[in-house]
Every structure is written in C-alpha cells, then in structure tokens.
Length: 353
Image 1 (spheres, one colour):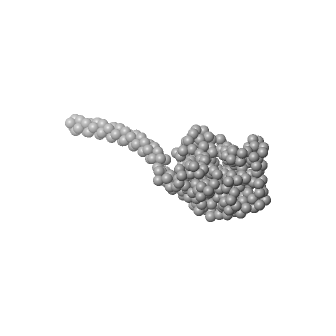
Image 2: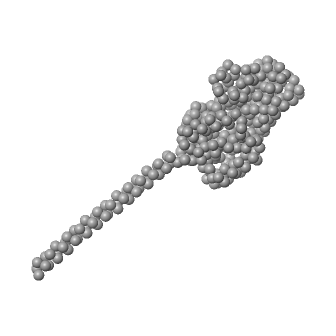
Image 3: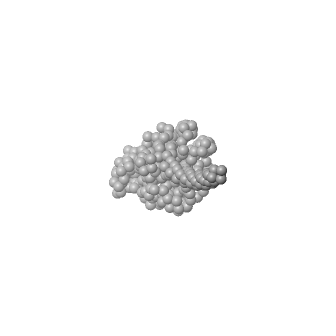
C-alpha cells in the first residue's frame, strides 16, 4: 500500500513538473510569435511604402503639340526609373470646359494623383477641389494663383522670367520703339504674369519703349498668331518688337515677318522649342527663344506627386532629380525652380527638341 502511494505521489509530482514546463514553453512561444508578427508587420509596411505603385495622370493644356511630346520623354524616363503608372492626357483643344471634363473622368477612374496644367485656373478650381475631396493628390504647373492644389510647381519665378524676356528684347531694340505681346489664352496664369512683369519693367526702366496692342490671344495656334501679326503690322507699321508666351506664338509671328521681309528691322523673342523655331532662328525672323525643358518638368512633376503621396516633407531646399529643380524654393504651396534656357542661332544645335 505504501509502495502504491509512493508511486502515485511520484506520478503526481512528475505531472506537475511536466505541466509547469508545458505552461512555460507555451508562454514563451506566444511572446515570440507576437514579437515576430510585429516585426513582420513593420517590415511589410516598410516594403509596401517603398514599392507602392501609384497611378498619376498629367493633364496638359492641349494634346498633340511639340511641347507635350517632349514632356512625354520625361514621363517615359520616370516610369522606367520607378515603375509607376504615369501618363499624359488632355483635350485636343485649349477649351477650359473640355479640360474640366478630362479631370472629371480621372476622378471617376480613381487615380492616385493628377498634375493639371490649366488653360484657365479659375475654370478648374471647383473640379480640383472635388479631386482633393476624393483623396486624390493634386499638383499644378503654370498656375501660381491656384487655390485647390496641394502644390504648384514652377520651373522658375514667373515675374523674373518675364523681366528676363523684356531685358532681352530691350537690348535688341536699343531700348526704344514700339513692341507688342502675345499669349496663348487671356486666362493663362503664367502667360499673364510674364507679360505683366515685362510691361512693368519696361515702363520703369525703358521709358522710350511703348507697348501697343498688348496681350494678343492666339489660343495656342500658330495660324492665329500669324494672322494677328499681319493685323498689327498694318495698324502699327512702326512696331519692331514682338514678345511671345505660348509655344505657337513666335513661329506664327515669324512667318508674317518673313513674308514682309522684316527680319532685319524687327525683333522676335518668346517661349518656344528649337524643333518648332529652328527655321526661323536660322532666317533671323526669330531672334531668341527661351524655354524650360518640358521633359525635365514632366519628370519633376511626377516625382513631386510621388513624394506627396508618400508623405515626404516638402519644404524649402527640397530637391527633385532634374537639373533646375534642385534646392527648390517653397512659399506656401508654390514651389519655384531655376530652369530657364536661352537659345539663338548660335547655340540651337545643342538642343534636339
């Protein structure tokens, strides 16, 4: 009997020891699993943040023109570098209402971000707010008066660019004589800012110059610029300076200048690309063009969208990949680079776009 009790007692003690060991092992395993899960979740989250593939739409003023064909080069490079889904879209006219319709469609598609280069900032404000209300990141370009955008990225300070164009023209004109200005649309923010800065500097610094028939609207159409130049030459036969804002402006002006044999007595300066202005630079009908590389702008705009989507800090000194977009100046939601380029007959061979 005592032997039996001893055996039972030993078994009971052994069971307790085993139960204690089992309980301790389970507790340790539970803690380890919890730690591993937290670590795995953290690693997965970091990986997802790094590898997130966003869809970004670039809404341009008008499709099918050389400026945005060049921008596509920068977008293609950004896609190759990052694997993001970024593409250019827009209407085939510069009608603000059609641009709004394009943006509405993108909202319905649920893109992650959009870049909008407005024909009229005022016309797109409501639909941009609608996009942001849906959680879509909105970045604009050439729209420093925008209210409903996360950021507006500019290649440079618009007033400084306009002043630069006036300095170029004033030097060519010997700081005297009549000149006129062209812009793509009366509602185009950047074009108006350039021209306002041009005229303000002229009035302050070059009193012997005079603007006539300012802000001729071309609707981004070279044929319209050509026809308006003919009218101006008839109305103001002494005019000798022409400042263009839209890419279509100065080629249209130059065509009218060439037809009347005025290459040597007039001066034409404006925003354009070599691929569009080359023949007129060669003939002297256009004296100088200025531009910022649309490919670099496209890359920088897409990159900025991704930074905002990732929650990165956007403040003074932030840099993007393309030249001209380093150490950016941030003032509110307006971001300025320093990316303009001057080209004339002597250096146009350096640019293949």
